Amino acid sequence: MSAAFTLAFDSFGKLVVTMVDGTKHVGAVVARAFPIKAPDQNISILSAEGKELAWVESLNDLPERERDLVSQALQAREFMPEILSLEGVNSFSTPSVWRVQTTRGPTQLVLKGEEDIRRLSTNTLIVADAHGVQFLIRDLPSLDRHTRKLLDRFL
Image 1: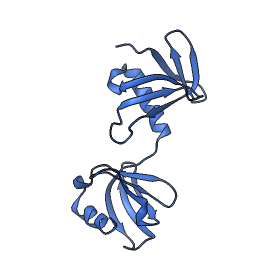
Image 2: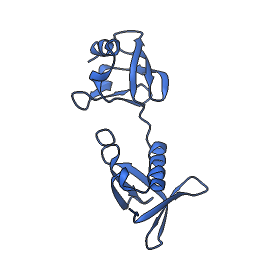
Image 3: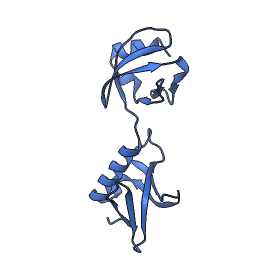
């Protein structure tokens, strides 16, 4: 399948969208409609002014080159590490320091209050640390027993 556009990054690292009619849009932005529930579906490509240039139902619908460039643009724009395990906490009252393993490696986060843990669904949580970084817990039941036990103290 050929797309109605092509993508490239210019020498300044800005995303350039070239439409089939030859129109170029420099500084385009790629955004997911449902970043947690359907990260590879429903992706909008917007001009620098915010006008939608293209809608991608699924990343798999794109040619390999465009799919890779859309993925790169998304990674540059989004930063939400996923918590894989909770190694320990310094206190069960807040504020507390959590030692966690994430998809981006080990780190520590400071939980200011229990209200900084938001439940998106039965199995999905977002944890916001004191610096505003949001961490995703995608599937609570799939976490190890130690992690679930520590999390239960805060939920």
